[in-house]
Length: 168
Image (tube, rainbow, N blue to C red; front, side, top):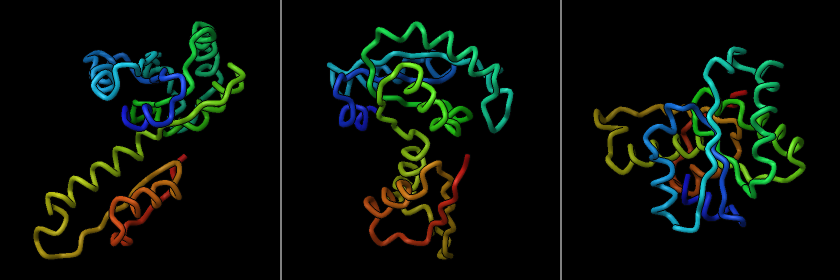
C-alpha cells in the first residue's frame, strides 16, 4: 500500500479510510514512514455502525461522512486508500463522493486487490498452493477485476487459472 502510494501521490499525502481498530497500532504510518520519509497520511476513522447498509452505503453514512469531509478540505491529499475490509467493498463509491465533495481528482489504491495479490504471491513463493499434488483453485474477488487480472498476470505470467469475480 505504501509503495503504491509513493508511486501514485504527487503531493505525497494519502487519505486512509478505516476504523479506529485499523489505525490503533500505527502500522500504516510506520509502513509509510519506512517507504519514504516524505510520505504522510491523514487517517479518517469511520465507525463500523456507519456501514449498517451491509453491502451499500446509505444516506446516514453519507451524512456522517460529509461532516467528516469538511475537516479535510484544506488537506492536500491526492490519493485515497480504504484500508478496512468491510468498507473496501465500497471504495469506488467513497472515492466518487470525495472527489465530488472536495472538487478534486484522487488516485485510489485498491488495498483489497493488493492484499489478494500479495497473498497469492506468498502462497506461490512458498509452494503452498499445490502441496498435495492436486490442482489448486483460486478465486479472486475484486471491485476492479480487469486490474486484478492484470496484476496477477504481471506478477505471475503463467498463472491464468484464477477466477476473478466482481464485487460491489
